[in-house]
Image (cartoon, chains in turn brown, yellow):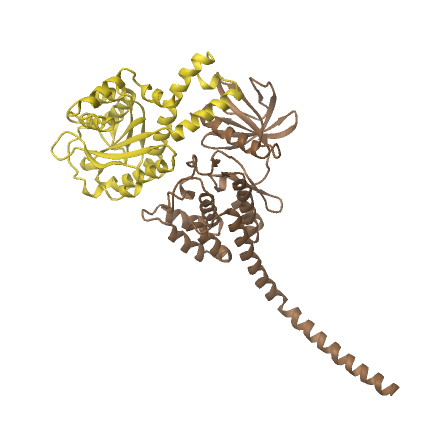
Length: 306
Length: 250
């Protein structure tokens, strides 16, 4: 169970079954059930995850394989699965596409809160795709999201992937619908959407601290989260969507996505109206001037040829 | 049906049958005993921790010493792992016969993927009974709220399973008796469980051993007056550990 191995840049990993070799470039992260490394294989840079417990780990890989099967070969998640011996002990690992990026909170800190609606929308798009294939992501949280470029948002770590209707097998308390006494722990669209809404609160300004305070309260409930969504300035424009996600009012990620877009566009239009109020007056003035000028010119022509 | 007792305590037993012996009785009847020792400012002490560990070993389960904050998660984790491990034992027995390997890890990744899928499906669908056995001695009084939370949390997860899942809560000592009383009888509905602890009468003695025996009787459904149930229990004892599941797996 414990992590008795540590791989250093330059170390090589050779699979026992498939025989492929990877060279470790750097460590990317560490989770409850494994460590992730950036490695270079025959086909270039990839991410390699080594698990502590072969069975839990295999469940995670099975999730990927089922997704892959459902996708009909398009979008392969797992490139290789194998075992490696480290310090006399066998560990399972799998290799996946390398996704560069930073956590959403860091991305927002570096690029500004204007990107907040973009990231939210892209997340809903990802969830909607996944739900379309019959799965929920399950363990949606900040640690499992990477943002890069112009707000490109990717989900990583599919350990919580659960088929619709089954019991959610991996979750994190603070994002868990059951923990907030707002519903069951069965996999449905609403489960992911609840976690999504909590994540949105966490990413909004000082939301993280206020969320933590609510979470440690014995009398925690979803209504307190709704109130927080209404209070946080960054959440204000999408507060109706968050409220619906927190109270089970959204039937699907697609519905949430549409509602999110409408909120953002409406707020954007208001924004635009304010910015354009001056030029609009100017335009009106210029148009008026043109009409008067034309009229005067027309009259002048009439008189001169009349 | 998979049966497990989760003992939640914050100290050492001080009266009645040795709890390690009681746990061994449970193990031989195919009931797993897990132990959670709650430590708040180091109350459980060295002897308490050692006893907790020994009970879990004799009961074929696991032992964790945790803070109140971690209680709910620990109860969840133990329940899930116990189910997974029991299924694993059965599956590995089959593997020995068919593939001549003694553990799932030794299979090739392709075969392992198939076997783990079957195991996961079984884990989700097998019938399950969890009895939470709570030490209601005086020092536990301040922890009731967290206990309620943990029980509620577990019932939420059990409710989401596709297999039959039942949960009950017992506490000890029960009044002046050296046994355990039933706070919540077998239920599938988590809503029944909230606020059941308020009525508990907290006492000074800690008869952990006799309490485990009470829980064992309750979980196996064996009571003194019904002869055929007793017979059933004897039959179970002939196939310790995995016998119960074997029937199910077929």
